[in-house]
Length: 160
Image 1 (spheres, helix red, strand yellow):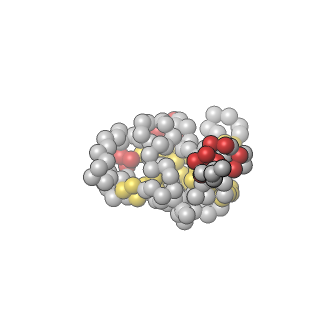
Image 2: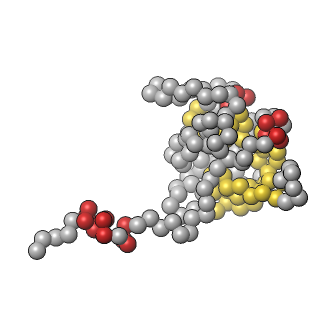
Image 3: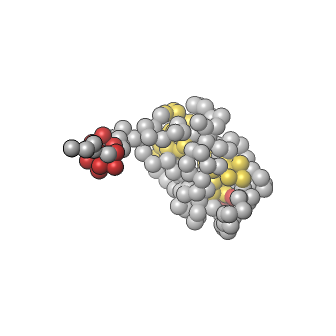
C-alpha cells in the first residue's frame, strides 16, 4: 500500500477543519442612521480582544442608541494606536482622527484608510483584511474604483 497524500487527508475531515466555535463575530461599521448622516455619534472603546482565526485584534465599541434607552456594542477591527477608554466618533462631522469613521468625500487625498464601503450602507467591504489599507482616492493602478463620496471608511490602518 502506498502513502495517503495530503490532499486525501484534507478531504477526510477533522484535522484540517476551521475552528470557528470561539470566534467573536463579524467586524463591521455601525448601521447608518440620521446621527451619522447629518452629524456624529460618540462611542467608547470598552475592550480590545483577540479573535481566533484573525490576524488583527477586535475592538468592542459601545454607542448610545439614539432611538431607545440602551447601549449598542459594535465590533470594529482595532486600528493601530487605539486603546481602551478612547472615544470613537462616527459621522459626517467627525474629526479626522485615528479610528474615526467618516465619509470618503470629507477626507483629504492621501489619507490612510481601511474598511471602505463599496456601496453606501454596506458596513465596510473593501480593504477589510488586516494586511490591506488604502490611500483615499489614490488606489493602485490596477484598481480603477469609482465610489460615491457618501461611502464611509475608517481612518488609519489595522494593528498587527
